[in-house]
Image (tube, rainbow, N blue to C red; front, side, top):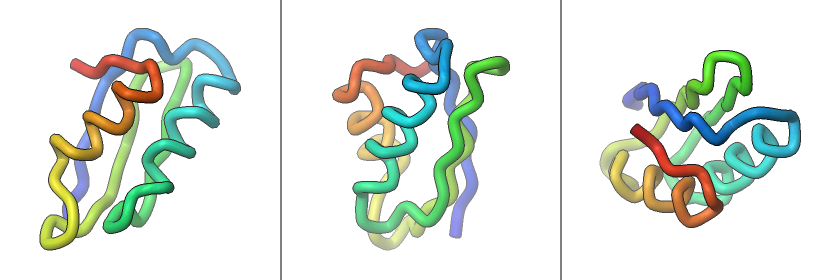
Length: 68
């Protein structure tokens, strides 16, 4: 398992948190994803043999939350 931290300045509330986490949890290979509206950080743990960080980032951005 690999851990990574992404940042999205658009995460600002509980609804944003749920949307980002739902987008990540729907992906095969993502074991945990946690979005924090206060720090704007998204912590993700995933299986590199199944999914790439770029694919996770694309799913989050498709949900409306561009990442840095």
